[in-house]
Length: 100
Image (cartoon, rainbow, N blue to C red; front, side, top):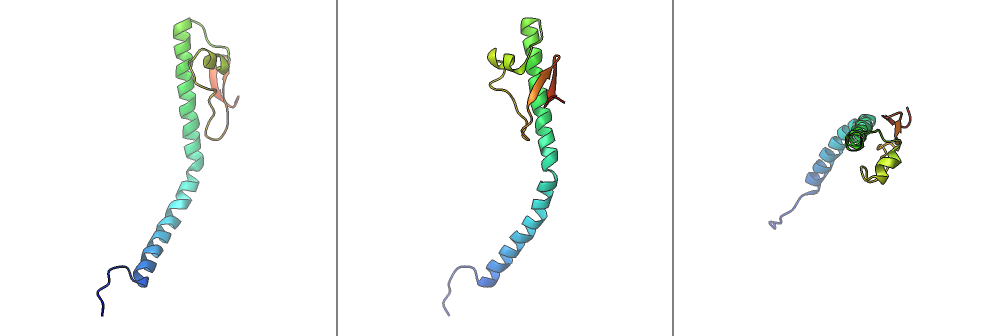
């Protein structure tokens, strides 16, 4: 018999079976937490915009009228959006998600 190096068919099938089991465990957990991840992203974006509103207020001693004013003045690079597509808006000096 030759002494060949490599995997046998049975070894490869066992490895593929283990990978399949791990994927079957992982994918449902990621799908369940997708909404939670999106909400955390929205909250983070909201807090970042709130800090820029406060920076604007400290610099100018007045609240900005809109998000576009923050963009024009250089406090934000662009109008922020949440990972789920909702826009971050400024209503009466308060930062809100999608005009809620």
